[in-house]
Length: 78
Image (cartoon, rainbow, N blue to C red; front, side, top):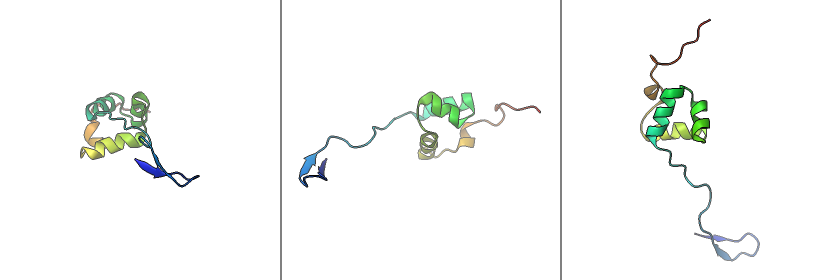
């Protein structure tokens, strides 16, 4: 990719800009969500952001409630 140098104004060839994609599979995301029942915990386990988890689900036409079974979710007792 060619970009213009902000200092000299000449075209400079740059090999790749930005972060490399994580490419975490949907299977890994779903299995982690079913085990942890928490997006925050899954993001820490997979070393990615919470937004990345939601974007993987959205790209595959899923929502969080579709992946996490409400019946197997831990319940809190007061």
